[in-house]
Image 1 (cartoon, protein in one colour):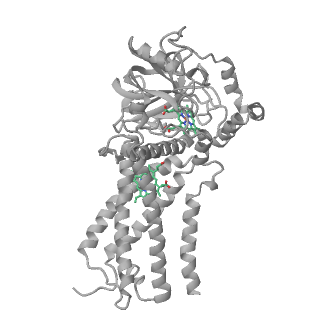
Image 2 (tube, protein in one colour):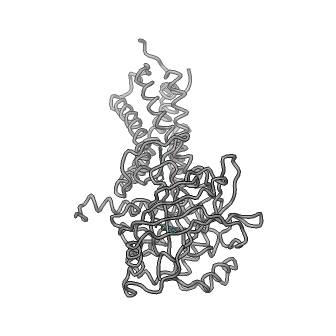
Image 3 (tube, chains in turn red, yellow):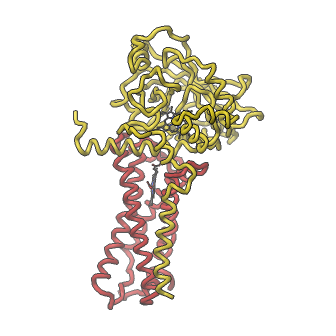
Length: 175
Length: 330
Ligand code: HEM
Ligand code: HEM
């Protein structure tokens, strides 16, 4: 196959939908754990449902990613930068899987039911305080890593788009 | 110019995340609240409020009386298991039972099912104030010995003060009445909603002696002894709001003339120390509700979820670290 210059449409669509979903999940997550406000309850309910949707979306996206041909990074890009780019993309997939997994297990350990569209999802680990402590902290720490990664990723994308103008940013935007 | 934009992008983003994560943007955050509740002498692994208590379990015998008001499983006639916890208010897990101003009963009915219902109930039928911010000020005033001034400045505390003046603590957890205080909505299959409050009402008269009145856990001993003679039973009584009641204001008592319905009987059968009981791992967040029950917009009720979660997070982290460092091996 030849080397495409843009990501396949399916991946671009999934990328931007997920970007919006993950950013909302992060902002809602951070707000709801400090707020005593009336909306906290609705935010939490939304967070859990949207978090499960995100889990399904990441798996779908990985499946598409592994099947489709994606654009190569520019030839003249230093090898170290190319490696860094690949590493951050891998870290993204990993964290995007770990966030919903820790969220899910945290709910299990707290003995709270997880309902998806009226169906009760299985409890995979026992209701236990130490397990809760583990997954509650991991959910928070992974979210910090994810935020750092997002800032790095957006900065790098802006660098390509604003300074280098080498088509890397464009590959995720237009045809 | 383009370089400025490159600097601006991560700066704005970082600032946005910092703002979202900061608890200082709230007048009182969940963290502020729990900090105040736990005080300076942190008790690792224990609840930051209602630290002293023990676990119970038993069955709820639902009469089916509320089935026409709510589609929740617990209100359909039948027998449903629950786990629960008796406790006294305060952050000290070794405080003397008899010194506490408030006693509590918390329940998780139908645990480990999608129909799970949690409730945490206290002896007062009303709250002194109506918002978490004012409640925070009330706790501050208690700590600073300025509660008289606080009450004087807040006329909405009248119903609470009247209750407190007339309340006589009994000599048993089994003979107290425990109130949801906050209101909720029952939703039936047709989608019709009815605002309610509920209370666990004792079925036996006040006891007149304690096994050991001097003991720190005098009430716990009494309940354990009582259970060896058979179940401890409460009626779960629902009070239905009328158009005259405001379900979002927990500072006002609803009249006795409102319809009162008995949803069923709570039969408490076993009790265990909290350190090895099932009730220790969970928090009794009153916003864990099955379909058929919804929370009112009472600001205090809505504030409880995040505060309970913060307390739960802290004690769970402490237990985790303890387990990890082997400090607590049997
Ligand atoms: C990609 C998916 C997800 C992201 C990005 C995400 C992000 C976050 C963040 C940033 C927080 C705040 C953490 C803190 O500052 O302490 C949070 C809290 C929380 N998340 Fe998620 N989350 C995701 C999925 C889930 C899922 C699937 C569930 C459960 C089904 C879940 C349940 C929770 C709960 C219950 C809290 C609050 C815990 C508390 O109140 O102490 N999350 N999440
Ligand atoms: C803004 C108001 C309130 C705040 C911030 C608050 C805070 C807390 C916290 C942090 C806990 C410990 C949770 C845990 O670690 O498991 C707790 C427990 C409890 N609260 Fe509240 N509370 C509030 C209002 C109320 C009200 C109105 C009631 C009664 C109707 C109540 C009844 C209880 C009971 C019974 C427990 C003990 C539950 C157990 O046995 O685990 N609270 N509260």
